[in-house]
Image (cartoon, rainbow, N blue to C red; front, side, top):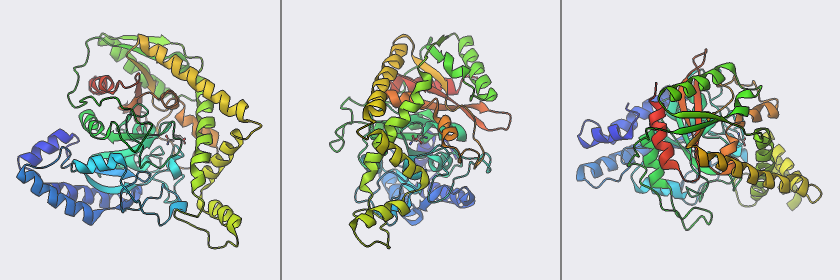
Length: 472
Ligand code: GLN
């Protein structure tokens, strides 16, 4: 099937294809790929019925802008009257009462949601191994992880079971799995897309992100879902540019790469060489490519984790057996209900983060950890933006390695956290970033390159991404 929505739409308009055929095509692929464990739930009948209706609208000339766009939604985004579990036992049996703003806007333009995708519990993880529904497998190599936490979303696009996937990115959860799976993954500027209806992990970092195999398709989805929303007080009021009216790439770009990022021990040879080759390609094409120093790089990961643990411990306090989902059956008073529900309902990684977050927020340690991390956060943002005053984009590896084996890192959280080494910078700084698939390593595993831009520069970022993706 085409990977560009514009081509699909053309076929739909001229009668070469119908939405019903499209949905059948993706459902067939879903059935062929059940071993990947991508879907927590497939909306088979609903998607078919919706496709038939939208086919009529296309014929009548009344179809919305996304008619024929088949999408999947990560299990952390509310979809009215559909189940939602955030990959956790604690939300067993929970039904969404409303649509997330992003979902409402996609549906209003006639997108078709084909299923809900597996992810790490409460979006905490880098391999999709922390899910109550079991791990997702990478379609490029079934012994390897797809990345996380939006692993199911990434593989749903990789394995051609949909055209577009919505995920969430707090510290890399869209970009890192996109790089492991060889697809594009965009994390917009913080506050560009409403978080209303996105289950909160770390509210000052959380963004909804978009996976696809084609830049124009991402631009269209962003254009539809971004912008002001009365249900999210933190969302930007800035006007949404017409991302689909693609900017022409400039003849000359100024690109920076970070010296310390290439020197780290954890960076694999193949990812490093791939980045250097791509930087050479950009130089050969006439762009300025320069090295910059960012000595704070090593402090970003601890800053990210201290702050997100703190926010998570607060956000997840609402899951206590009273209102949502699971309640332990073996309780005898209110306190034992809280304790047992949370002990039995949450997985290990989530529990350890709640405890660490509670610790860094506790009276005796608040200043040493939380306050300090907030200060470092400001420095990271200021220093990153200072680079972006002189350069159009910062070019980084998306992840230090390609997809690792299932079980390889899940005994040691520190090893797992290193997978986010390069994605957390834009998250801590609140800046937009995208992962672009650029070649493969010696095992034929996809490698992603990350581009980071200044606040609200998605238009420029998408124009350059399209150019860079096709630069050989
Ligand atoms: N892997 C990172 C974490 O575990 C990022 C997760 C995310 O972006 N949701 O926090």
